[in-house]
Length: 423
Image (tube, rainbow, N blue to C red; front, side, top):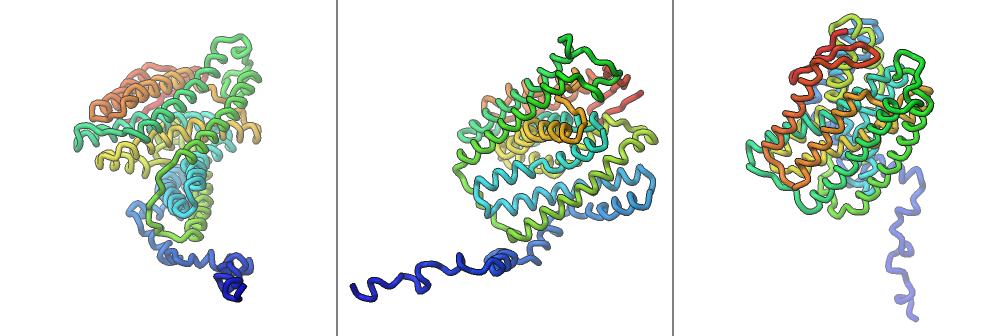
């Protein structure tokens, strides 16, 4: 055998050399982001990429007002406004980090950080014992996605296109989403039925069962939360295996820069959420605004404002599959991931958070999911369906005008433009 036949094709023995670089050198190469946008270009895009980042001026105001004990209304307002652009930046960093991670890792990353703002705010409220804020903000997030945002999207899209179609893979994905939403409805109905109709569930010795639920209700809620988390993990894995199209998005940030940006934004959101939650109690006491209004209306807005605008914009471009994936997908993440996760966290930190929502909230959630399922199972979207969703949103508001919530004597009067609560 000649020397040319036995010689390796590559001069280093068949290896490119990258595998055997020292660890520190590989770290340096990764941080430099070779063949990727530079750190300077990455953060220029990250900070100046959207006009919404003008609101980042409220981030330092949130820290200053909290540390200097300014009026609690200002602390609440500044923290609220600060989280709006931060939630957009969190989504942008997640998307940019997902570009080069592959389909499976991208799916897991988006599942983890898709509703990170809700999780952060929920954990902050949970650690401060604001259990009703946690529950109402979760229900409010789901209803705002599947009724208000989806309804506005279909109505706006119908003004530009007579009828939108989402067929094939999109329709199959919608059927799976609807099934998961129905499952999440049932998991809320069962605890409510247990607490309202069974003797063990009704044996409660304190005035507010939200603060001291029965042992059986805690057992059902925590067990259901574990099962829902398992189903959600299976759903993510199923999506990762079934995904056949790759994302052709051009990276605007380096992988390392996107990871650092994701970490920094998450930390800043955590502090702003803490400032926001700790100011709720005194804000509701000093100003004509209730905890329920904050939980149902304001917190869902602050967490998904950018996604809501995107959903409506995509519908006007006749991209209904993307609109539905934003609205219904976000609702599934909240119902099957965020809510169960907060129940488990509450278990760990000894906060009795359960899946027993008030009866009105449970019924509203159930009928809302039923209507969305009926309207979208045909794979078509039009302005009339959007009007139906917005009509249900209005009917729920009208029904609440004479509703008195048990245990806390809050008279709720809701109109389409807002909520008013009178103690």
